[in-house]
Image (cartoon, rainbow, N blue to C red; front, side, top):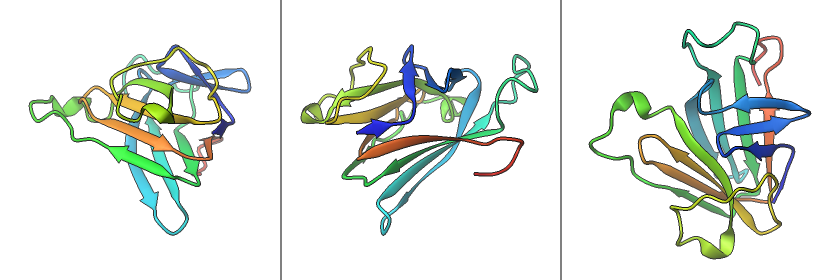
Length: 145
């Protein structure tokens, strides 16, 4: 897998020297898989919390996974607090040869060629994507991506 971003601290992504805190400053708005294009997209919207400064972060981020060859989306915890449905807990790269292990984090900024991208959410849901590339798209000047 190739990316145009790095993972920082297993809760943020960094691109062109700019860090985007996916745990504290963004909420997952939606995710979509387009079968014919083999693309999986996660859309993040800037959080509305009072700790968010108006000009600190863009309104929207998208992580676009291209040439998807593996996609796993697990169930949410039935006893969850629904306010946790949009909150990322951790993000990590993890070897595709260990797809039976979906409960571990690796401290790794850049992916290896055979890595998957794993997203762990506060509601215990996990999304695991095996793909050729993952691109971070940043909404500038409040324009939609």
